[in-house]
Image (cartoon, rainbow, N blue to C red; front, side, top):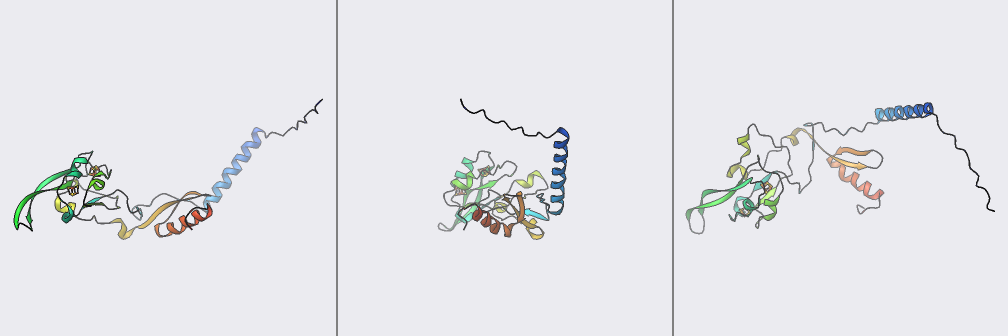
Length: 196
Ligand code: SF4
Ligand code: SF4
């Protein structure tokens, strides 16, 4: 006959005991974050998020590379890009001709990047810039000259570039952008990743 298993009685915490333990835990956490806060709120514009290269932000046209194929305007799902006729001097024929070039309407653009991807001559490129501010709706419809200008990085003049990295103990942590590469490397090393 098999031996009867011994059943040990585990003392259960009372409701009062659980309540006290929960409150002590909450107080301990509060004290910990009082001395070692982990504030991730972005103090804009004193801080701004440093966007990575390849971020699909503001779009700029390189006029000399454009061959007026209109692929960008045709593929645009939001109908934000359209072709406009302008008089340009053809250097080979030495005469003024009407040609079409793209312009953009930021009231409609959804920053999908299809226009940049489809351009066969790389005449369009994104700028990793997100903070677009206009005083009225009409200013968001760029003309051909404006479409060739890089935006002014206003926040980068006074603000500190920051980024967010994941820390195993503290979760999401806000760090200066120039420190993030170092931190990402440390996290990669700790987890045996490729960042060695
Ligand atoms: S990013 Fe997308 S929505 Fe914006 S202009 Fe290009 S194709 Fe159109
Ligand atoms: S796809 Fe490129 S080359 Fe063609 S019209 Fe647009 S910007 Fe110009």
